Length: 226
Length: 320
Image (cartoon, rainbow over all chains, first blue to last red; front, top):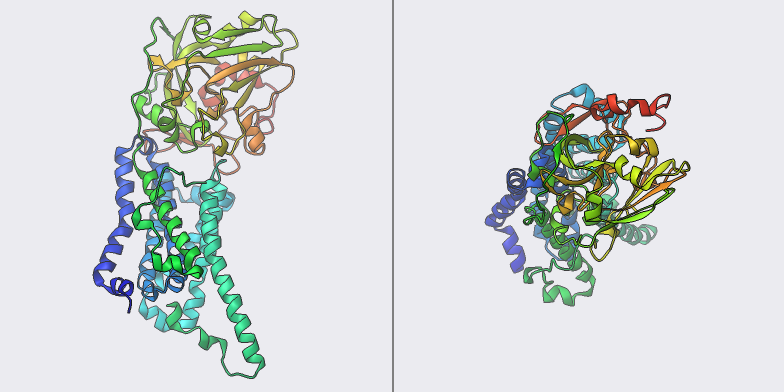
């Protein structure tokens, strides 16, 4: 085991990463009380800041698999569930800001927005899609669903990431730099998976042609993805 | 790009030698470094704005306009910290941070076009065209927030009467100062610059249309459109062009930047209208900066008595 992997397996590292993921809450709270620009329109600032951190954490989650393969740090997997749940945590803060501060529980008004404003439609869809992922993030649910079905379900995160970027791009007035930046990262991270999938498929195809018995399910064991 | 050269990576971001030597992994080392830089940018974006002491000067000898709103003024700190001035960046904090060194010395304003007496005014001359008044106006941004500001200026009609528009003049075109050396964020604004705005002649001559030199008793801070701007209180804020250098009386409806950027979303008139939604959000309500709850948006921002007659017989859903 490399030094890096032994650091990654330390329980203190997990505590450290847990607290680090919580740090944006501190930044946001500090800004909304201390920074005059953020304090001028706290509702909008909270909406934007929690939205920004949601897409960032979705990207961090998507980065785990490529990074553990390319940096030879398989133990990075220990943080994926936590980071993914943090993405959901920031998404819940984002959604709550919209419900409580922006619309103050005016449900019919909000539902009208979900139907009428396409950037809210896609954002709301991403929120709804993420709920089952958060619920089924436990070991018990992985067992109940079975590794393969669990993994198929959790591929929804690819859709969620794309919806998140579209939500952002449709919201901004004219300066598209941030959505383009996040969109590029999502495209790279999903592109990596596409390339891996194509390579694996082309490796398998000749094997099958030769009559080899290696069903594709067996190649993607739970170990690599959970 | 988002990543500016001055935000240098630290040694902790340097790709380790073992990875550097591994060609296959180099690209993803880069990705990690980009991620770290992006995270830093995110942290930096959350840090408080570096707002320095403004270079404003008190204005003396203005009278108080009797028709000012009696609503509570928005705190000056809010109005100088929360700005849309895309020449200096698109975040609300960017203008306060990036416009501090904006050099407005030797300012002049050219007034020309279909007028009998075209003329270039120095700022001092321009300020003396008519008596200055303090007018407390509601100001409603198209984004759904609003402020109440004590502006100092005089009606644009006073300037128009001086240069004498000809009978051919039907519209007034306004142009902002634009210099990339002073406004390096301009190319990333996502709108074409210099900023252009326009009014119909009767709108420009309306007594509410204010050529504005100051606010809160002082000259305009850079981020609020120093040294001279327009304020048109019954229209969305983007119509109130900042850092004005040219006023042209013209025959035809002039191009305006937000209309060029997205004609479906921003009309030439852009009157505050709670009944015509922006395609992406409702305009029925607004949040007064400093308030927790939204309030109802008023037709013509509450100035209907003075301006509604300008639009008699017009379908404001078509001419939005």
